[in-house]
Every structure is written in structure tokens, then in C-alpha cells.
Amino acid sequence: MHTSTKPLLQLPPFPQKVSLPRVSDETLLEYSRKKDYLAFEELVKRYEGRIYRLGLKMLRSPDDAEDILQKTFLSVFENMDKFRGESKFSTWIFRIATNHALMKLRKEKGKTAESLDNFSNNGDDGPVEIQIPDTDLDSRVPEVYEQKELMENLEKIIQELPENYRIVFILRDLEGFSNQEVAKMLDMSVPGVKSRILRARLMIREKLAKFMERNEENAK
Image (tube, rainbow, N blue to C red; front, side, top):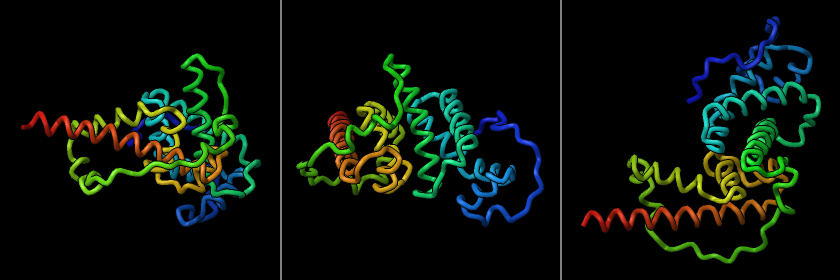
């Protein structure tokens, strides 16, 4: 859980006009456009934890995650007039956060920093003809998640995924966005998202199965 004590934004007080917790994200954004800072603060409260966790999963650094959190909400604040409602607010803000995280990742790797506009590689990896192994791994998921060592190994496996697959996996399977929402965030086609998420799951399943087999052999 995000526990940072740093103030996210220094906003002047503004009289509360509505019962904010019951208002939709999109309505809060409309109030924010009219300089209702309490409405914007409510948006911050709703999303700061998830944005921070996303940054932490992608960058593996609390300081970097904090930086992504700050940049994301500053971008939202500065660009709220550009939101046209073509997607949900949650899709829009996660696209901004992912964009900032991706640019930071590529900058740290010595690559030319680029945005998600170039992430999709035309949005499709082509057809995938892979048969998912018939194993009982899925039925053992509750057991898997109770084992600290296995969880640490799973986290390592996810972090070792190729960048294009890891980001899609984080958004789709860890954050719970739909294929359509991830496609909008990353400017990809839905088949492209399905292709990458399938490949990511298979890579994770294969490595996790090998880890479990080694543990079972060592236990004999």
C-alpha cells in the first residue's frame, strides 16, 4: 500500500459543492476543469494508490514510483481539457502513468526516450498458434500464493518478461483492465493485446512450472 507522506499537489482550498464520493470520475473531472480543487483531490484519492503500485511494479523502486505518481497527476491536472470522454477516465489516467513509466524505463536503459505512441509496433504480433499445456497449475494457484518463496520467484519471473509483454501483463492480469481497455492505453489492437497476454502467461507458466518441479524433486 502506498504510504508516502509527501504532499501530492499544493492546491488552494475550494468550497465543496457536491457529495464527492458518490460522483463519477468523469463528473469530478468536469468540476476540476472549473477549478473545483476538492473534486480534483477526490480523483487523486481514488487513484493515487493504484498509480503508485503500477509504478512500483514497472520500475521496482519506491522513489521512481513516487516520481511517476507525481508526474501522472500533474499531467492530468495540466491536460484535463484534452480528455474527450472517448474512453473511461481510468483508462486515460493509466495510459498517462504507463507512458511516464515506459519513458523512464527506456531512458534508464540508455535508449531514446519514447512514448507509448511507438510501443505497439502496429498493434499486433500476428496470429498465435500455441496450445496451453494441460496441467493442474491453475488449480494450485491458492496454494502457490501462500508460499513466500514461490511468490518471490513469481515476481522475479514477471520482472524478467520482455518489456512489451510485461507491461501488457501488468495492466491486464495484475491491474484487471479488460483487453479493450489495455488496447486503448497502449494504442494496440485487441488481437495484439490478446497475443501478448497469452505469450506472457505461457512464459510465466513454463518458468513457474519448472520452479515447482525443482522444489518437488528437492523435497524427495
